[in-house]
Image 1 (spheres, rainbow, N blue to C red):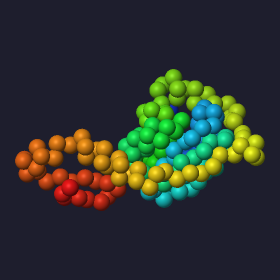
Image 2: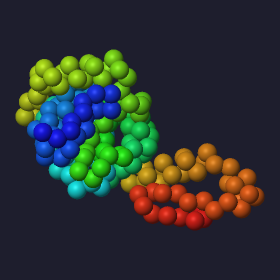
Image 3: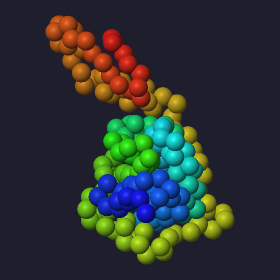
Image 4: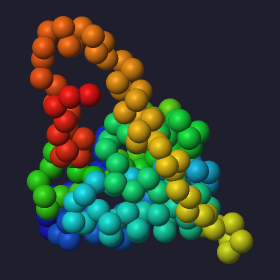
Length: 187
């Protein structure tokens, strides 16, 4: 059995030897139950296993009656921004951040865009361990929606609005922003 962690940062583990689709389905079902339906933003990183877990999580959330805003490939800061912006009840990020390539993770996000508090995470984990999930009837199954076309541009505009571009230009710094591996050297 590979390494597996379930706790403060959600669920994470080594693919196939520890983190398997069944656990992803159960975790997403627990989140859908915790949120009692409602709209959930789901996004993922570019790891090889992320599309598999992305589809499993979306299916589980829909089966709990959640409408899913499928944000596709998204960075962690963007999902923290878009969840409250779209007035979603929560979010789920599929991506293992700084873990090795053979790992992946499911990170739940609260409606305000923050990580789960210890108390709220314990409530979520209680549902996960009980395996007593909300199951929608055939006519209440959730739907998939797309985010607004310009949400990433809007996020970048918000970030840029926080910068004092004139002060930066006066210092003649070279600015490099890593946006999914694309590098820019000027605004």
